[in-house]
Length: 321
Image (tube, rainbow, N blue to C red; front, side, top):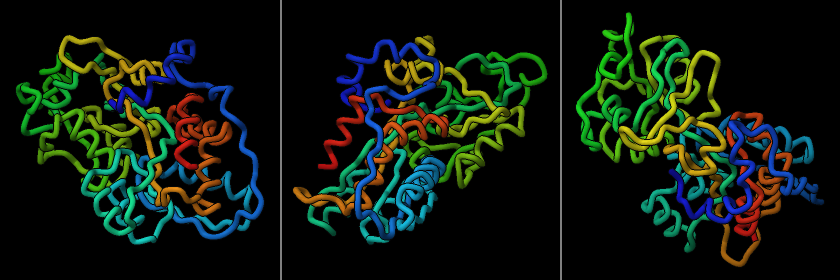
């Protein structure tokens, strides 16, 4: 789960919003985007696959407002963002996890200051099964038993659906496991939070992108996989999760992300190189302001992720100053 401090201020004013199963609109208190003069030039983004579609949608909307901006987007995994920012080959570094201390240190060694992270959306990282799989819920202890070979959560190894209480033809079927490769921020987040930093089984079918994970699960009734909720399709189902065996089960929805009950909630970020006391390049600043505007957060909903409440947006905008 992403840090509770991120939510503290926002939760005081969004009780009614948190009752929603899914966001149908963004917080009315978020300001509309106002175009700025003189925005032009090249803008490069390298990083998260989970954010790739969202970055593309934002880029399309931003370019309509600023035809003289040329935007290039590459989404091969969060681990590609820090090196790109350090090398200056991208001004935007979308990441589905926070930078590691080693990545921050490498950035600071180059620039003399730390990178700035801007939260742009919320996500309930989902554990997906095939739409025809009847399993009702899983604990993270059982998720660890399925995906991990080290079992840091203490459970026994799980290899068939029958071990999870599934009956019928599926009971004896081996669990086919899909996941991401190590360049992925989603891989890193899942490893840390679901597997308690344990090691994945060698049998995990590593995929280059979230869409490939979901596609694999949709085609195989015995499959299970993980990705951001924004990649949900009609062929899969997000399994409700509990933090521990026997604990309270929560669905992967907006209300449970906001109230903290869904155990795989996270913030999605864009990292930038912002020298303290100095403004960002205009094209970079305006892209981030667009992403954090009412229009930009409506794009978040369109892409299947969860929008930020207004108080969270205000906190991110302060980081741009």
